[in-house]
Length: 188
Image (tube, rainbow, N blue to C red; front, side):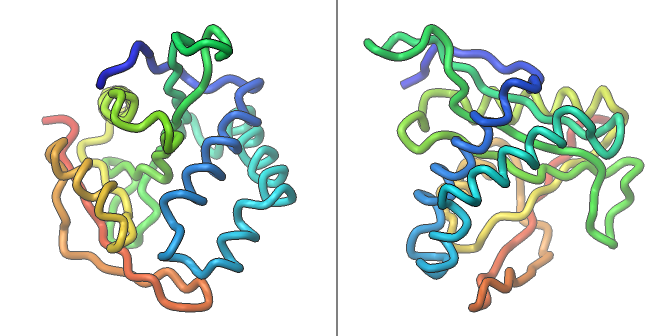
């Protein structure tokens, strides 16, 4: 089902919504992958306030002019829902991996959709908008890291033309959680 919605640059007033989406998405997507006690710390009230502060800084004072935060907005067709609500976001900018060149390689740092709002086209809209924005900023390729166990994210990216590039890492969260890097060309 494709829902009515659009993508726009994040605004300062969106920080609380980004934290809300991030926490809900992590709680859903990482359950059973990340140790429960750590996941509780990352998604609790204290963490949510910290994430809000971090998103506020990312929006108001990005590290460079090539760092972007975009939000997916859904028109409130559901009864009791605000007329427009943020249901997802993507943050991206210059590559941070040592084997990538930040002049032409972009990284998607985070791509999140509210679990109850997936499969409505928001992820595709966000991915398309960030690719277009990054290409306009002069990047030629984009990459992101996905937990190896997050098959839903990997399948979504692969269906959009992304592919694993062979790079692997392990996220140390008290236990080692394998991650793979995916990439795609975004401009000629």
